[in-house]
Length: 93
Length: 468
Image (tube, each protein chain N blue to C red):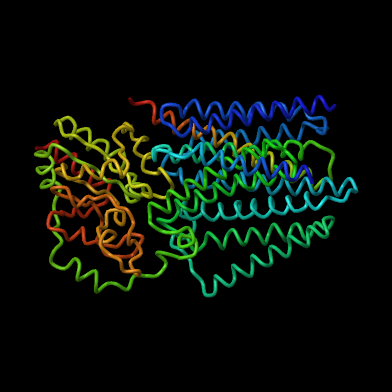
């Protein structure tokens, strides 16, 4: 029970933190912020790695493998395309 | 062992801090590049420390998965044209959501495999993760299909859809309860994934066109919430923190997009705007008849030549015609004649938040020239010529005037182009925008219509300017 309360506490505080952090975003950054945030949500890769590599039923391992592929696309693609867009905004000053 | 777990968790905390600082930096232009790199570093640290986890007994599958995912991710991220960015972001949302569903399912299967009974806490978190993730995955596939043009972009409304959606929500919740009560029966889990997936499809199907920015922001938020739910399943604070941050970021963008259309989220999600074929031909005739002045590129070039200040208003039509490079040529020649050129960007112009900015930056237009609505609106008074390229509803003055509830854009903040001396509208025809209503701007006394494809018109104007 303690674990649940602790997890919910972290969850709620992090949402408030998120709202405060990203309060004023200039429209120019809307797309890169979205793709960058999206890459961060690829943090499920941490769970995917364990799902794919630990002892499990074959179906669990298959799910884990697909999850690793999906999450890696999410992480690598997200950070790379965000960098590309931000670089584009930066190159002409 | 305990020490090891403590160290891992402290390193996860470091990753979370890098994400927080990264996101903070991502929301300001001067620090955004650094922000993205910080977040990527946080991710790399988290991945490396996870690989040291003693639960992992085989690395082959992981390595193949990472290589495969990294190849696909890198190649698509490098190759994707900026014009295809909305559907690319949509697909990234989907992959994140899909991964969450699979991880939570796999964790449940693993517990069953060890002949343990999952706690209610575990099962409830799992079904949350599975449902949100599956809705995100299938909703994003549909959004991708719409944006890529594989499926009609028009909102698809069908009879009794509200009832069907409510029924499906009840079915999904029931299946979720069945999974909690019978965690070892994987059939229920699979049907739950399918049912949530159909729900995701049904939630996106009635939304289309100009409402897509809201959908993409919302799916972005869901992908974060799915990751947070997976964090509850795995009792991993890093996932909970990162997922909530992304969920919050997505909600902020969603809210911004709704405000920019003066509509509630509920209205965007369930209103089905733009689906009904317009039956307002009569009113369109009333608005336009005998008042629309068609012009030529030569005439407009003369007008531009005598201007001091020009503002270009791009819209989705510019993206469709891929006119951004031609527009850059046009503004180059204007600037060579000492004419001040700026761009007025409406927050919901295009198909995702920030769509116009990305396209214009791709055409090497410096971002200092891309002005947001609140900044540029007071400047239209001192503007000689406004050129509207492929925008319609976001410059429709009806939004200011009408309190009529049947007017879908009533109260929507618009770019106040009517205050400029002359308005040039580049458009292929007088067809209505996404909102399906006529635009009196096209019939205004100081408006000139240039009926042409956006790209061709920009090229013609450039040629005409050169020939002056």
